[in-house]
Image (cartoon, rainbow, N blue to C red; front, side):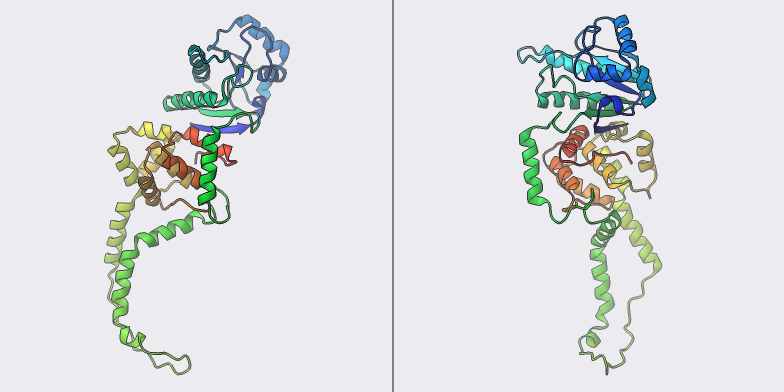
Length: 369
């Protein structure tokens, strides 16, 4: 189960089914409808549509994919929108029905993946922001209940846009907080270095105390000047005997408190959530989530940890502690990290919405591990 955004011609994606913005009558419409007919084979697809007849607004039907089968597409799902009218609330509900009925048909057909365009924001005149919000709501709701990969297909960068105010607010946040050169998704630090830095941070108090005790016996010697050529022979400093058992006990105790699995399970319990709710909101596969929970030595990649933090709807301080439990932190040189941080600070937890924000800033969406 996953969600992603792809800039492409919907007839060229590789999913089990694609959704077509169809004419309600059995005839070839404009825009996406024309592209689908041309790619699938106009005569064969039109004949199949004539057999179906009229499609009511908000309803969806399916046909074979004909020539599109060579692209791996098995089905075309035809959905019919309606013209936007601010004085008629039913037009909004009709658009919601287009998404929900299309996705349901894809599920009933046994599809593991489906590509869907941003519906009704062209010829039917739905405001882009409203059309996008409806898409986010309906796709998110569907993913909470169903295991399927959904791709939102946009033809070009101007085909959709989050609100200008939100875009400007995020850009200002990035301008104020982005430090150093951007070096990929994770900034200029790799994950291993970050984990080691955090481990040093968590062990700092213990290490300082240990160093003080070890060096205390050396103070008279260390306080004297030492010359390289005529340095006196130093007496052997008597360090405190450290039993391996003491070190093992410290590691075990610290590891238990910082264990990512323990932290994750405790947060789920504190919020009285079901495991399924969390991994579905994070767009994480059930088997992968089971691997995370059952293997105490396994730490998922940073994006998976972030997705789980968003699914748990953690406030910023708790989100940062959650990242730290897996050995990660927000990197000031990473635009990806800063956008996720902005979303957490502004309580934007819906992963589909976060992905759209990331894409609008030229970044890859969250990807399953």
